[in-house]
Image (cartoon, rainbow, N blue to C red; front, side, top):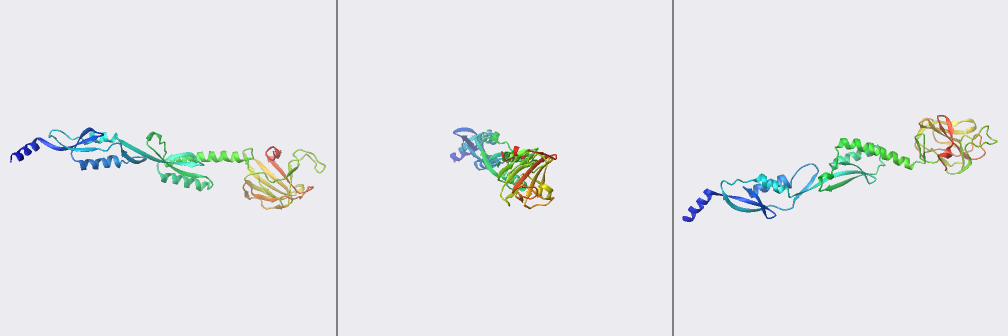
Length: 301
């Protein structure tokens, strides 16, 4: 009976709480271990914020049941703050790469895949990929919203493609990228030379090749005309824009018609010897604003 009386006095004056220690240092009291573990789970382990992938604690809390004076207040908030200092947060974000080069960073995989789908719908040949990145340093993350990233990346891709096209071009004539030579052969008559078969100096470049050899258009453009043209024989004229034209003369066959759109490298005709010609060859002319220039300056160097 005396023992029970003592117990009663103890519980009148004292109350049970849990002392919480981190790395052996007591940081405060909580009313319930189970309830506080739920708070830790919600606010730390399941911490939900932008780019957060996972959270771990350097030190887990340790609990010890104690009796303290009933006037002693528990301090769950302070204990939680002390635990938050032990948090290790891993962040995740996504980079969009073109040929291994970073173009943009976004927060979610969905945003990254949407960007790639949009870009590939305009150019299927782009070597684009998504790279998942993780870090424990939040300051490393420099992401943009989907709308901002789309605006930025579109301009960057256009600039990169343009640089690649220029690097792959044989030459650029008045802003027109020359992507290929029209035919492989031997130069038989150069620009500007005089000849007994001409009334004036040569206005183009003659490349001798076997009859029927495919002739490729040197740049993107639209066929201006394709037909017989006096001393030129069968002649194909292509307008490349920016007042640049290319002419392909003495052909034996023409595979295009006026109004056709052609891409650099398309076969538009075959080598022949029609018109004023002494043998199978391509007479190539390049004109700017209607004035002929020396094709050899840009091709067959």
